[in-house]
Length: 275
Length: 294
Figure 1 (tube, each protein chain N blue to C red):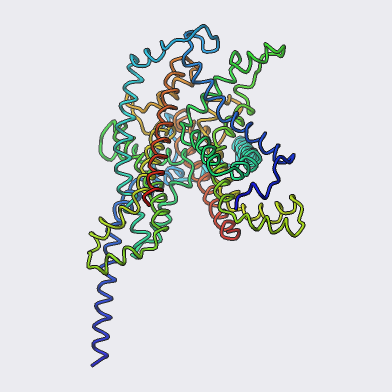
Figure 2: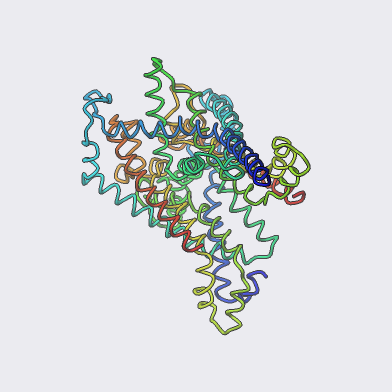
């Protein structure tokens, strides 16, 4: 039974709801669309439209700072997504399917990185790596390694939450059936559990990838001179003011997230069909 | 005789249970060890630093531990920044709720195919880069930006909103709106709408049916959405840094300033510990309320 029958058609309330919805959509999309439009402005001054041009995209490709930051971003995102997906999925499996000592402690520990604001997470990791560099007697530890380690630290929890949600939907009867048919635990996991939770694992991986590609605050604290990610690099540029180059880079980042949404929708649709 | 067989069975079961427990422990071990090293130990270090002293050169001296940094938390400056952050977080949460509730209600009330299309339109900004979405407002609100140009073309003056609290508020509402819409949508979609129809059949007015049935049943979504907006806005850093000015400092950029600017790590650590304590209290309260309403 849908709501539409509970709300009488074309009542004043219905009309107000529709008006509000279109206003919210306008609010959500107009800023993004204006930004995309201005990235094709030929003029060096962002605000004065003088003609269509892809000039700033060309400059972006030849900007060493942007390209170096993009490389770091992709390396960090790839490694942190793979590691946190594996470790987070294992944590989810242990929490949902096993009883063991320290389970309660891990439960709380997994939620903390999600609950605390990223500024405090950034502070914690900065002091940790600063202290570690002193202990190791190394002058400079900050760089691509510390960024990757930090991204894994906040991503494990998000992957674990998504995979646990999926695992809790499975009642375990298929796994028991496999066990009754003399499958050992590894075979059960490999042949039954893993295929069933795969949409959750992919969803968690996608969330980890997005969070890694988006992060500014933690990365800013743990990156070193000359090695930082694209969002932090852009953040530094933006603080000095708007520019058509930033508009172009921003548009590329927006399109990248839209592609990721598209990929996740395709996965979900396939999953709805098969599972 | 039977007793020994039973106890043998018990022993086997006990051994199997133990093996299972060990397996669970081993599977949990990587995440446990990782979070111990990169979360618990770092927290411990922040905690220790919050009792340390800052030298005149900005180095942190890990000796003569004291409560000086904590006593500074009671400065009028901190009270002013904390009040501003708290007010802004509450106003942002309320504005998001007021916009999102009728919005989510409208989406749920559409037919399946329209509903899915609208939902995708909400998902896109949700997954889009937060920094970029905030930057878009920096472009829009600039003194020679599109909004100002339109205002001037219509005979109004230059729009001077950028670097004010209003700009930060717009940026926060814009940034966190999708975090409110999605939980509200989920709870409204899961609701049993036959209850509303039943109430209408019993001559409840539309408003009464909403107030007595829809609103209470969607409460988990309201609570979840509010927490998802409130906590990050209280620690917001990117939005005030891009859209705010010197007089709109919030807790988030104040803490960052202690590390990347003023180099007073003990004081910044004490501030972080304070914020985390408030957050944990809020989270515990949320789970209490959530358990009651669910």
